[in-house]
Amino acid sequence: MDNNNLVKRSLTVLFPSHLPGDLILAILLCCIFITGCDKKNPLPEESMPKKWVVQLPAAAYYCSPALSRDMKVVYIGTSSALFGSHMSNNFFLALDAGTGKEKWRLQTGINEVRSSPAVSSDNTVNFTVELRDPVNGAVRGDELWHVSPDGDLLWKFNINPGKLASEVGLSVPAIGSDGTIFVGGDRLYAIETDGSLRWSYSGLWPESIRNAPAIGKDGTVYLVYHNIPLTALNPADGSVKWSLDLGVNDHCFASPAIAADGTIYVATQPGILYAVSESGLILWTFDLASAGFTGTIRSSPSIDADGSVYFGINTGTPSSAFFSLKNDGTLKWIFEPGNLPDDVPSDHFDIYSSPAIGSDGLVYFGQEFGRVYALKSSDGSMVSMDTTSSGITWSSPAIDNNGVLFINDIEGKIYAIQTGSKGLDPASQWPKFRYDNQNSGRTSLH
Image (cartoon, rainbow, N blue to C red):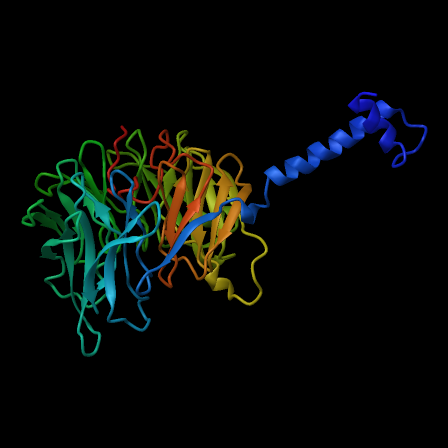
């Protein structure tokens, strides 16, 4: 008797006698196949395994990770919340991207690494440091630090000589194609690779700039903040090409994103996203209120291959939502996270984190109380989710070419999470916070 007939006869005791043996075998094979499929498709919260988790020596409230140009090193700095208890053991660190093992650390003491790092083409690293009084913790000023790939401090530049009292050192440096570093402090500074000043721009008066400039393909530097309208600057001398008032209280914590056709996208504090042509004309606006939401936008936009725009919202009703718009400014979809914990205040469900678009067509971002989501860019449906030990505020993900996503929480844990992608989507027009994994803030598409 062959094996198939043996199986059929053995199974007749489990099924009604009137069923043919071939049908019984087919039913069994279907059951086996379905069970096997379940095992190959894990639950969403299990589908992004953590490769490693490293506890940094202090909290990491404001920083987002950056990767070296070969993506083998993760750079991150530590800092406290604005009204938190300020630490005296802050560092800037380099970690091995494959293992999380520390390669080197640069101690900053009570001084805090307030910005995300930006990596230059020679792998030198740039970040802003808020200087604090060692006795009472009061802010003394802000500096740009320029560090070698081996962790040696090469030079510093004072970006707050006006000693503005409000928080300044949050602006992520943008790196020009010639290596020029553009960074906000009490004004916007253009700094040469040797640490000397090329020019500075303050508009009508000095301003505490806490977001970051963006650089177009032709080198034009775009800047917008509270009392600074959206302004296009000549990178050579800082002269103004054009300036545009966006609206009442156009205060911006989010940084601009630039599409392949040169359109600049700016998300503002009142909950309005602007699309502006590279000649300085408003093409369209999208107001959260038009979709029945209130809130602010602190999540910097990302732009995919077809021009769809992605961003999160916070401090609204409801406070937890993630939006996608078509390239004409009409709504594509809205994702509202579900199963939110009852013991967490609703104002901790915000989405500050700026999204990263993977090569798998998924959009990745963090949520304040400690989740990392992966959504389909086509319809906003959730594909997978992972959790962190504490909240994610300003941290935005980087994704290396092995599909490993790097993000940190406010307690100072940095996570390497395996996704199904092969890195950032190479066709996306502005795939993540600050454009690339080096946080250069400079588009290469036009």
